[in-house]
Length: 188
Image (spheres, helix red, strand yellow):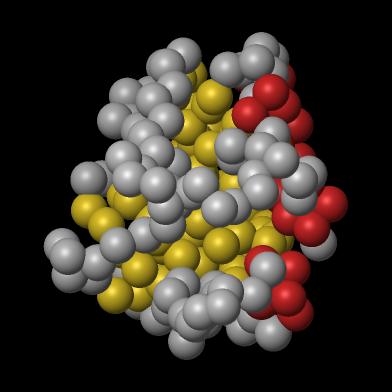
């Protein structure tokens, strides 16, 4: 039911209407990637689109075999996000859900991007590469980042050298075939 974003220790839910909500502490999520953010690197970025920002971060943290938690706070000429509506059983594949995902475009907006660069070896457990979410400064709009044009901002990166994977204790996963490569579907 949307996108989960954790910013400064607070959990936000961006639903399919593009609005930001504070979910109940009882809400569950099927998957989350989080860290205790402690930046190792700080720098300014000016006039960067999504791909340029990725290249700058890769230059600052060249080791592609570690996780990098990223936080960019600034003003954006353009921000394009999406969110996914709640699904019901039997759950459709993400590639099917994404065909009807609502997309939101924002101009001249302040806010924060948070997310991760995951190493290639986590393919199958997580999506390798960059995965960012956006929250507007007024905490009213956001979503999964599809594209952006940053005017200027501050970037902070936490090099994360630990991975803790928590799976269900019961047999919930026993009937699922998790050996299939879904990377092409995820890229779509």
